[in-house]
Length: 499
Image: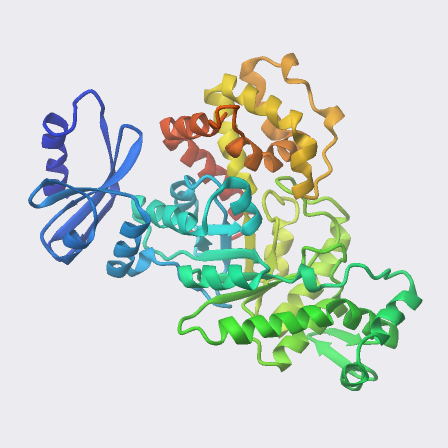
């Protein structure tokens, strides 16, 4: 450590101007044979300073400072080099028997704060988690998402392993692409194959849809389910003809797609991957019959599922607490957890950010074994920081988000009451942070991330993006602490803080 840090002083005095300080991330010191590297920050940009003379030194691409020292960008190519030398910097799968937390990071800055929180638990983090929708709205790529997660883990010296989730993937081209990138978790979004156009309150519509299936398919399901009782722990499930027609009509095409994707892309991999099934992005609440039916069909066809996300009763809206009857949620959750346990996979909770009132129930009913996805709440903590340290910028972001709210609302199902949000002109700058405690304002700010990060003026210049990143860079330690506290609040209520 001392020898490497000594190299910083001559850099300050000679090659790098003394007008700017160099920030040293001491936890990032790593060594391979006779080569050592450490992360530094100079003029707002982060680099790897590498010293040595072995293959790692030669393989990293950077600017030679002297014969045995290089300054390297945090590039995609250099991340791949580091992956080859340090196994913990690669995304990895964690399987069915480990509690996992998805920590989506829309800015590519949050991983160090996430590390601070995850160090207090035995749960494993999915630091790289982005959906195609989120990538499109932020003009990012999955390569960049994994790069930022890896470098964030390196910066904090986190060697406990992390995952990369290709979240809510639907199309084969996206699945194939992200698997090649090395994602360790695939969340298959089956919503395009779940029949949402059936009127489930109309028996004739259900029967009509069911009868459109060929006779062989109908006979298969009827012989398998009708007149039989299925036991899941202390719960008994008996499918009536009506129950069966409904579940087959709604889910049979989706099951075919799940099986196809697994056999084509998952089973043929030469490495482990966590395979999650998402049936939550639908209008239809997942009943116990629905969940059991999907799980039974996958199990009988040899599909190894790591986790499954049902559509729970009530509302799991973005960035706010659970909306609905908690007693009914508890009853349903108990059965969903039993089904997941029966088939030996984890129950997955999507839109899990800030669902504080139901976190203890999730922990209890799943016996502490689950997957929880968070993402937008980390963006909101960035907005909180801006409201505190750069209120003038926050005011601009706030006004722009509200001006274009109808445009951004179409991407997410949220129900904020705009009329109950205090106009910003009525608040002092010191009070702007109150908006991050208001559910209505949180939802507006949540769905506006893509708009605010990509909005441009008539000169094709970003309106806010540069300023947002500059503030978060200037106050990065404060941002990490906000994230740490906020995610720890999640972990505490989920009863998985252990350290």
